[in-house]
Length: 116
Length: 114
Image (cartoon, rainbow over all chains, first blue to last red; front, top):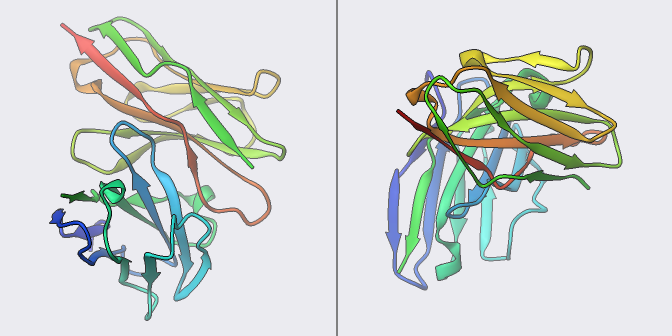
């Protein structure tokens, strides 16, 4: 597609519920990132994929967070047993090469997760 | 590790006035620096980036930024703002061997008053 597509656009989850957030990167983009943006804050890095390999997951806040990209294209961020502190906008970004900081990243519009 | 400090959480200015959004970074290695803009309910859009070379970088929508290594700053400027520039602006840094992730500042909300 023309851009990075994220779905759903909005998600309301009851505390304790599991959620899955989807990211469709630009076709052919090698690198894929997930960021978490709390209200009034800058985005914070969660995890990074190069093709299907998860090369960095140092930003995942707990073992309730899990990300995958099994075929090197679409990625899913899963949050188990959601807590109120998980409420945030989850941003996905992709890049054509593994030198994204040189060639640039394209961000999706994000999924706004609200845990009630 | 890198960190970014945006010194102003909010900046109100009048239309057609100049603006400067301040950004300071901390890093033990050479860095790449970025400014992104976020309009309401949208993702981040790249304004400009500094990789190497000339310290004055020009971006889209009339914005420019100057890299100052001695002061570890990368301030964003525009000589004359428009109502349409109202948005959240984020400074970000990336650095270190193989490090692809961006470290963002807290953001500066730019509000343009008519």
